[in-house]
Length: 333
Length: 191
Image (cartoon, each protein chain N blue to C red):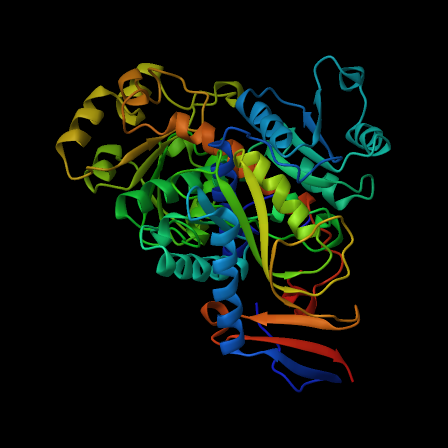
């Protein structure tokens, strides 16, 4: 694997390998010395054409814990605002011998374009492109789910997939790359996904996606899903009226205090509430829900660093150009 | 990891240690460790995956047989050195494995690193780096089942099961029943 562009094309074994490696990275995060020498001398460039707090910080922390050098590049205040093209920016980074480019772009497909071009030799990691994909977010969500549910079952999480889990993804599916990446990854790992959204916030062609669609959040919550993933209402991408008012949205599609109380009383005893952040408190999620013990928002941020360490390590540490012979693998020196 | 079956290709196989030999060597190493440490106090055995770990577990059981105050499960750990290797970039990506330390930790302990084969010494160098990141032992020693020479670093084992003079064209294969369902040490050489 040279690039991480999407979860749609990620095989189950590759995903589990990333999650298992993240498990070891998480163990490093609990030690006194939270640093590994694995990527010493490697350069990771964070190339952000769109605003981001946690993804950029998380990638930066991950690269630094693996001893890589990090260059942060934000389009605002760079030559991009003077009209520099993606190609010229990429070639500049190539000239600085970047080994990996973590790219967030407002245009869907920009990371794939970069990876397919001969502008740059580096590994490309998609950190969110338009409304297409955000693979590391989906991986950290899967990691959070796997950890939580294997802990409850009292089983080790290494090597496990997500078979048997039922997950509801609720809200602005139309504009959400997180929803798309999660849908592909979670179904690849064997979980059942139900999308819950107003019809105006569902994309065209949803009937071809491997999921169920519901228009009634309370009905889905009553079935006791293992996790409810609330999506951010992406006001900045909305150029039309998708719902009548924010109050109506919060009442019909938001995880409010009433739904939290209903969940506490009902079958969904261990249901967790996930949110990729940043949250619109009071809109898609109430403060009480966001701060409840069921909420995994902060665990997701913590796990994000481990998962991104795993991705950087697996993409950058080895030389995959030569295939190993069985004999080489068997040598223990 | 699959071990190729003997007598394939153009190689010659020679068994140098059988299961009884390995058992005797480990018994002797266990006694040597106790002797050098003047007892089992503060002793921690850290096995280097894959085969160093079951060897460390066996040594701990043998130590417990001599000193019944020792709980063999409590003094064994597993030290993964994958991310500390200096040849990461020369091989395909290796996923890291778990590092598990005894609950007592390794600070101010006498740590005995355990591995199956000592060759270039680079794995042990990586292990010494890995140890620094998880604690500060009082003493670090090294026990190996086989020392085959050809060191590339100034590293020496304190306890050796068997010194095997080999040529670098040969391969030494250690099989441990916990992993390979048989106990033996084989030298594989060009025909």
